[in-house]
Image (cartoon, rainbow, N blue to C red):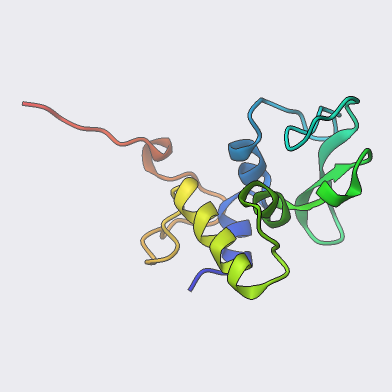
Length: 126
């Protein structure tokens, strides 16, 4: 069964989730325009929350978009991560989109290691 802890362990404490879903490169702690709405001022950033030991997004212009990576993906999907069914859908989406392989237990690497070959699939054609 998927869990929040497994996703965080396999995604560099949520940072890789933000990197996957944000449509541009960003730097932790640097402000950018929030891509989820017509943001006029760059007052949104991804930061490391030491209290919760994970990366989070803070939007000073619209606090409704602030939260962890699960909240962010929930906003993209149009769901509310506070509901169990929606949260399960969010976990499954992250697992699928980041190719974590957690659902079936096929990802057996340590939390800090990269998948073999950087997650690339090599096909040998004869």
